[in-house]
Each structure stands twice: as C-alpha cells, then as structure tokens.
Length: 150
Image (tube, rainbow, N blue to C red; front, side, top):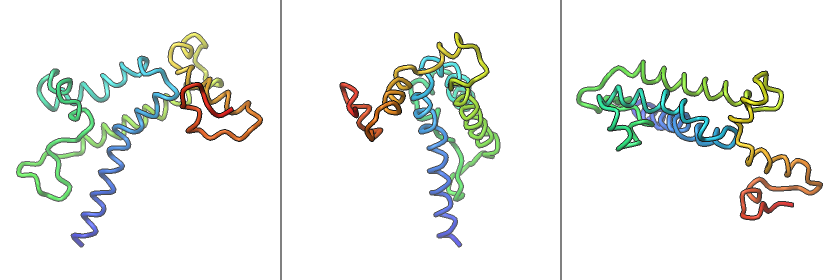
C-alpha cells in the first residue's frame, strides 16, 4: 500500500509541475509572452505572495510561484496545511490557459486587433511555413537559426 501511495504521489507531482510550469511555457509558443504577464501575475505571483506573506518573496524565489508549499501527500510535513485551495488554483490555471489557447487561432471570435496583440506571430509564421512546405518538415528543425526545415 505504501509503495502505491508513493508512486501515486510521484505521478501527481509530475502532473502538478506540468500544469504549473510546462503548460505556461508551451503557451508562449502561441501567445506572446508579454501578453501572458497579467495572467502570470494574477494566477502565479499573487497567490504565492499571499501564501508567503510578502510580494517580494515570490519575486526573489520564483519556485514559490510553481510549488505548493507546506503540503505533504505522504504525511511527512510537521505542520501541513490543507491543499484544497492550492490545488483548486492549479486547476483554475489549467482551465484559464486552455481557454486562452483557442482564442489565439484565426477562427477566434475576438477582434483581429486584439488577437494581433496577443498572438506570438513569429511562432505562427514558423509553423505556417512548415505547413505550406511541400517536403516533410520536422518541428525541431524549425527552431534552428535560419529557420531550417525547408
């Protein structure tokens, strides 16, 4: 039973870091990173500042923005907090980012001017060039200096 609980904890923590760090990093491929700054401040920095008791601590120690602190899924923390609010926030972050992604597409209902300010057009141009290429293009080569792949 303990081994299953430990394995479940490892899987859960991997999913947690994907939701907290990998998903926002991947969103920077479709949305301009500067356009994501208000979301990052609202959904990552502000909750970390409230948890830490200071606005400067998450800025000095960015890991506080991504890690759920004072929580122990294995009961090893001496004074654990209830994790419900922190994990509800993680789910909210994922839902917000999943809602923003379709808004960056050409078929989005938002006005073209707003979409123009939000979309990372450099990345979109790279993928458009790959789609229009008559040859098979591997995604990794698109990020090479000079555009690679075609």
